[in-house]
Length: 468
Image 1 (tube, rainbow, N blue to C red):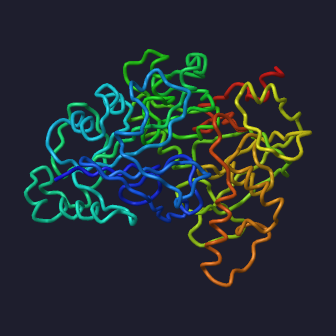
Image 2: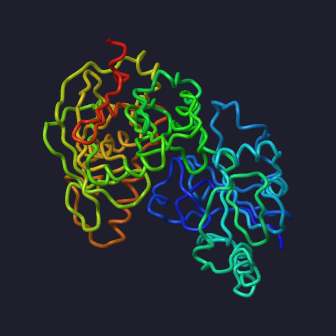
Image 3: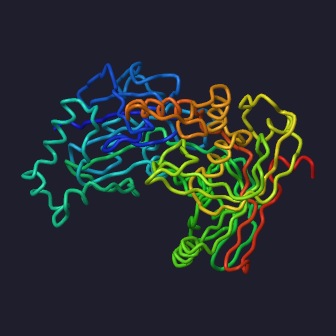
């Protein structure tokens, strides 16, 4: 049986497709994208999608994975060049090592594939998961062949497992890991990279070191615990190396890649579990500093967030059944100078074309709930997006120009039917911009737990450092 490879820009769809980076409005709602003009060769079925926000699904082209991709050498040193996302999905056709099979199927050099495995960019499942709705007839046929009950019964590796359990994916951790016919592989050929990791003096970012944990002043433009396709270029790894620790530090909580500030990393599995419990029991207090384009009154702000785990996060001023409550308290709000162009360039802050740049507003915030993108989404909904936040400021500007564009905002209207509302939601998602490249006006300035028995503060936020 031939191997099947489907190379797609990461999407949030079941089965073969995954999510990463900029997505179009239709994709954000879980609507499948069709790959068109598929090209076939003897080794693989290949469909290539770009991840550009300016290219729609109908304009996608396809190519052989061995003919038009870049030349591959090594993942390190890290290049500042951003590669087009490429994810390959394979059904194993012959037994052997995972390294040998990927090299042969995707025409990649062994050292590059070994790097991908070290980065955590290769995943497997014992049984192939269901293909997405836009799969070709040949892909569906191959899936049916390798998941036929009579075929599965002959595989000793899945004996005693349900098909659903056998379709669960795990990371490949060794180049010598054995693969057998019928297994599924997902290869993130172009993993998301974090070049900022190599520019930081990590030792200087350590706030505290104890026997149980380390507190880090996380730099913006870095990932706390890594991504689906990159667990090498992350704060936990670089902090571990900076301190010369033999046991890797473990992530206890997350803040956005574009946010800087306090992060707690556990030194043991036991304390990692303990800290998770403290967060769950609301014993951990986090304060943030936000640099917004408009002032906000002090007090508690409440929204409701759509329970879909992808950006942009949509919030509503009104209660919607099933949506998650988001609450934060603005403790202080003071007028400060808008950062100069020199400062913005130094810290890679994107100019998001906010119309008035006379003053900015620094807000101290206490999080009462801890939703992803909560501060960013709530401030944007209040017409006070954060400086540099290209994702949410674009939508806030669009709503200012065309009030009522946000179907969940102050001027939301009644829709005559569900399809009309769905169209409005798709259009609203499309107003959001790209992911910030490095930093935005947001810092996790303080973290404490156990009634301030453990209390830590970050250094000055980027917008204050030049004034110190």
